[in-house]
Image (tube, rainbow, N blue to C red; front, top):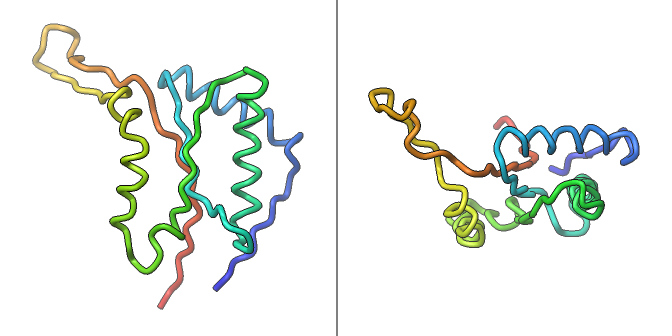
Length: 134
């Protein structure tokens, strides 16, 4: 069942909020890698939303206001029919970032303020999930 997606505000109205959001993410987490899980194919209701999101993030990078790498992965197309193992395509594609960002490891008993490893970045994902009752 196709769902209608409406974008109620134009890019000019939303771009300042997008910029504030990503600046906050960069300050809080260091590096930010965006992961767009929305549809990439024509005739999908998510395509307009996906295109608007990609454009908003690219606008930030084009202005050199922020550097935001993006990975596009059409989750619903790739995992259609319950093929959730296809998520490994995405994780393999992003393995360098996983390695570089690392993870946080704390030890409440330790003598270094409890922090053993500090994560160096974060993944900012977006997706539209449709819940259908059976």
